[in-house]
Image (cartoon, rainbow, N blue to C red; front, side, top):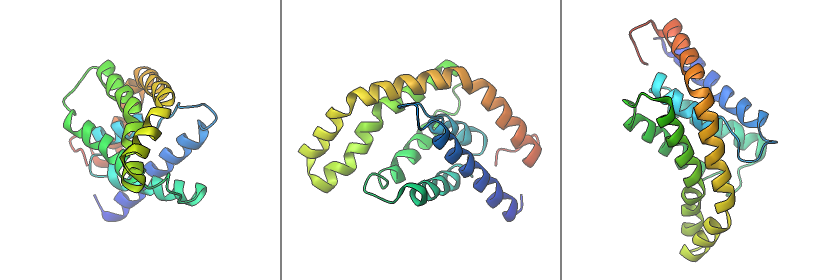
Length: 170
């Protein structure tokens, strides 16, 4: 596939991540970003990281580049790496479990940066105070993935086949 088409598709994927994030901002701990990153990893493995970092740049430009922004530079690639490692998994409910566990561990992953900046006690305190939010995030991710994994994957698969042809996963 030509370079221009790859860049355009990664930008479109970043835009979809951004729109989905802002569209659901009013619902606490309910988001599509986790599920979309899992699906992008499965259907567009070479474009997932450019789309994630494009999303993060857009998100930072719209909300500022505070200390809250930097942990996302490693958190979302962790999810893409997990999805890549588990790409042979077939049942949608297993992907929902992965997404739910990721939401549950989001605060712990985030706390790593706070521990590095302010010391381990501060990181631990930050993580513990956020556990109720992590529980809600995990539950939200699980339900969203359970309901939307199959239809969104089917749509992304059709889109991939239309862009790349039926046999490739680019």
